[in-house]
Length: 283
Ligand code: C5P
Image 1 (cartoon, rainbow, N blue to C red):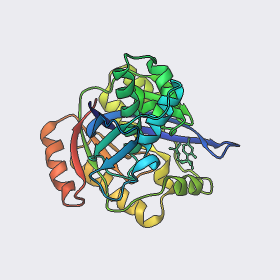
Image 2: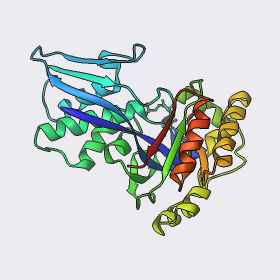
Image 3: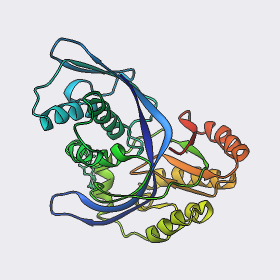
């Protein structure tokens, strides 16, 4: 079986509070984009679960989120682990704030469920995914959605109006737990207008949605990284983006464009800044 695992972007991201369990309550609007990993699942008849990828430094075996998803799936069905090869062609930048690992996990859940004749509903599959990671339930659902709680409380939203997305991952990686720890100690100067962004989506208004893109983690970045992220955002805005923001805990920056020619030009310009620059559509 071949499946695609789409990357996600945060149109907004707000951190509300730290929870007693060490996680944070979030409120964020998620959007999937066409940038995707490709997964191939193949029964291998060995009784062994094996994960491999074309990126050498990606964890293989049971440490990989795709493997954890398969194990949780079989556990939920009351089945023992099965002989399966999962091959991942990695296209989504790693440690980038685009949910690549979570999306691979979600793709495995959807593929296994489909192969077995859909024993689980999408909601049940999302609950299984929650055990693998906080972003996995959203990745099972996909599209445009409001995510609250740890990220697992989902409300589908009207799709973001048709647009072009330029995505640029600068050449440094960010540790998600480390940035969550930092955000507890910084004073947030600005919060996203999530309600306004939801209303803009409900009105089908791309311009008003794009004006409200904002991610509180931009304020929590160490200074040098923040300068780099702001510089890339400025390049996107200067190139005609209707709005630009960082995704997740970063460092990926993206901009939304209503004109394809401007998006292509901005993509060419940002490609000079980072090799990992992509022109995408929404899914
Ligand atoms: O659930 P997941 O393994 O993807 O989360 C990775 C890390 O991100 C957690 O260990 C935690 O430090 C942080 N996190 C958080 N609050 C969330 C989601 C993630 O603090 N809602």
